[in-house]
Length: 322
Length: 248
Ligand SMILES: Cc1cc2nc3c(=O)[nH]c(=O)nc-3n(C[C@H](O)[C@H](O)[C@H](O)COP(=O)(O)OP(=O)(O)OC[C@H]3O[C@@H](n4cnc5c(N)ncnc54)[C@H](O)[C@@H]3O)c2cc1C
Image 1 (cartoon, rainbow over the protein chains, first blue to last red):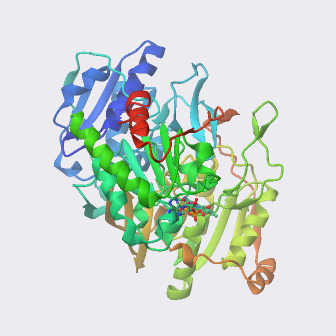
Image 2 (cartoon, protein in one colour):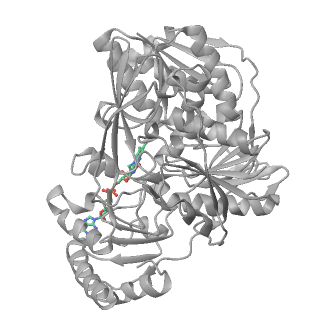
Image 3 (cartoon, rainbow over the protein chains, first blue to last red):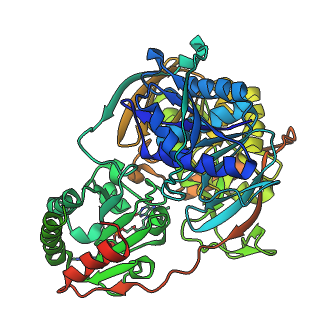
């Protein structure tokens, strides 16, 4: 009857999203008076899950799972859920978790609430607060099926330490040929860059930057902060920056700790996608730009003057504070 | 190749989001509805398969009669037939089960849905549909080619891309990248006229159960005023970010 959580790892290391999901699972387990069982796949530091309240780890080691495959991973979780008789399964909302969640939901005949931002406000009925209308509103969704799946949004519940001794058990689910009918041919991932999905800080540039040749100062600022770079939609549509940097309602969602918008007006579609970020800074020369209504901190000024100065000052700050 | 494009009928991205009946219902007053943007990229890619590879393209929506203008728009963009499953869309599971029936009856090779709809952001219909009909599935799909019965797709992952191959039948959760923004078609007069004559078949639902229910809604707390920092006093910004926000 434990709460099951899938803890995603990459190159053997758990993602921060996995620890957040474990923290959230522990919160639900406390509400239900039960404990948390995690499923890890080819991870190395399983015991580290104990820090976030995991009691048992079902450790899967299988070379066939070295590349993510939604059907196969969902199959692993299905068998684990049945093994544990889990009534609640917690996932994060990384690209992989969002990929496998609906497949798992069908396997388990489970209702699925994505983008959860808080612990269930009640467990009978099981009602979860989640983002809807692309961050323009919240929706309280009740799940009525016997097994329930909750996907917890990045940075919404955060990490909660809860030191527990995690028992690590080998778990060997049986995998079927049909689990691998979608074949991963190649993975293309820059390993030296912070990704928008993982970043604590995102520095984003808009049309106010005038052209792709001016992105050097955005990259400098981002490098100084260890941040990922992003952009508004027209910037990617015009080919100034790759589509993978487009954030907003039709681009990637951003739920960073800090979002710095430079030369971005703050159109409703842009804001919808980045609003889940905790702190927002806007740098814009037009004091009437709508972004000022959505930001925590604002600077009215020319980005071409402000950004290089800010980067210099941050470098000094970093040098004095490390 | 027979293609089915799943169309979600959603409020226009500029819509103000309000609720009625004690915050239990979305207030459609004054709201304009459109084809879900993620679906529109997929529909436009389907048009490419139609033009270049002779595919046929059907569109489907699970919803009541008020969604028909959205289906007509898809016909005006170039789809051949539209299907409306005559029941309100209540949750992802229910919609996926209704779509599964349409998909099986139609014997489609490729089913294109959007990675998520921009209203409920469930992100579950394409994956559930695929699993229900035992088709292959690729989510967050940004590129799709089909040769014979083999598809090559590119999926966006956190921080990169993955190239996948799979046999048809295939379901994708699509998004921008499948086609460029500039490829999106605004229906012309001829398209709109032709769309009026194209079949829009209303089929009765199988009556699938929902597993979740939207009980109520809430709007985010109003944002406090922005704290303006003088451009000549950037140290203050650094101080605020460090000491107040603890973000750096
Ligand atoms: C269906 C739909 C979906 C959309 N989805 C998205 C989405 O996902 N993401 C998205 O971003 N947009 C989206 N949009 C587009 C959105 O409506 C805006 O057009 C877009 O966000 C504007 O981008 P921008 O802020 O970079 O450009 P602009 O609106 O042109 O703003 C540029 C800003 O830069 C400022 N500026 C100019 N020069 C300087 C300077 N020297 N220093 C400082 N500031 C300067 C200007 O004051 C202005 O505020 C969508 C639109 C539609 C219709």
